[in-house]
Image (cartoon, rainbow, N blue to C red; front, side, top):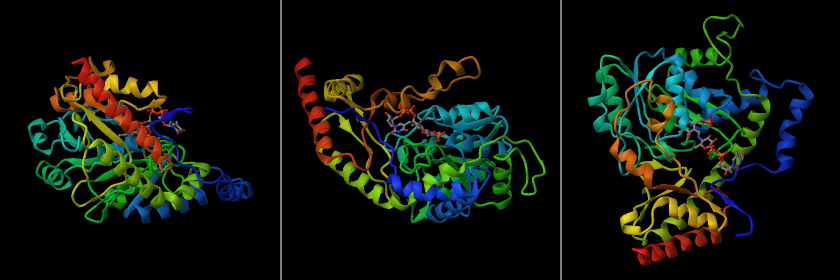
Length: 375
Ligand code: T4K
């Protein structure tokens, strides 16, 4: 490959489309603090995500911290370690203790049947992750939360455009937090949002993201600064116009990967979920060394030799971060450990050429033959 193929490539509009969109910003000199672009994007995304209320934030991580702070959680939060650093860091930075629940082999999302055994008197919430855009067991999690009086915040960073039974994924739980980072299916350069059903909670999110102020500018509580600026919102307005088309292109690429890789023994991937409309955010494969002949790191290196940069999302587990070791007890999560050892996320973005997908699959196919010889 002449040019490096990276795990993703930000979707951006035509240069002229963006410059046209930002002209108003030049005319008004209004750069931040919930200007017209922010208002417009908030309204459009609310509609697209089918959310009752939506709060835009400067990034997904601060959106998570804002949501956690607004819920006034205490003690322990049940979550999964098979995620990006942000999920666990947000819990810990809000002064709470993460309690790690194992994941399921079929979707890599929280194992709903293992949540109850982790609930103690100190548990105040469940924070599951719709990892790679795979949807958690929403019904069971809601039942458990109701039974024990717990809040549910979904880390929905990967799920812009995903629906469950035709409903926007942001309409489940007490709140769902999206990321609009440059590497995501939909981006506002950096960005994020919190969706919820409760107006009081929504007002609290809004206040916390803006120094604890109410709409009159009066400080009514503790807050920080997590506001999205006008240039970010303008990028979002442009990217939103192309989102449906981009998700369709992603779908075709994923189908091509699946078609080529399904026959290779020792390589597996997550199937489409029932009742879910997916957004094809990532394409992770699981490498089973015993069956495939090589381990995940070797496959990663093999691709690297061809100038293809797959990524080990999500390895290591966040529960293995040294910075947590002395802070709280770390629960064992054997399935998550095994998945993290074998997972490899392949390149995926709307204009990834099909011929490159074919080459990536061919390298993986040939790799298996080498692996067999070395056995
Ligand atoms: N919860 C979950 C489950 C998350 O995955 C994330 C973020 C969050 C919460 C927090 O949301 P944010 O605060 O980020 O909104 C990337 C992203 O920075 C991060 O947003 C994402 N998850 C995570 C899974 O991936 P890195 O450190 O792997 O990114 P980096 O810089 O290595 O970029 C990866 C590839 O993307 C590059 O090889 C090329 C491409 N790229 C990158 C950038 C920055 C572009 O094409 N354009 C770009 O501008 O973390």
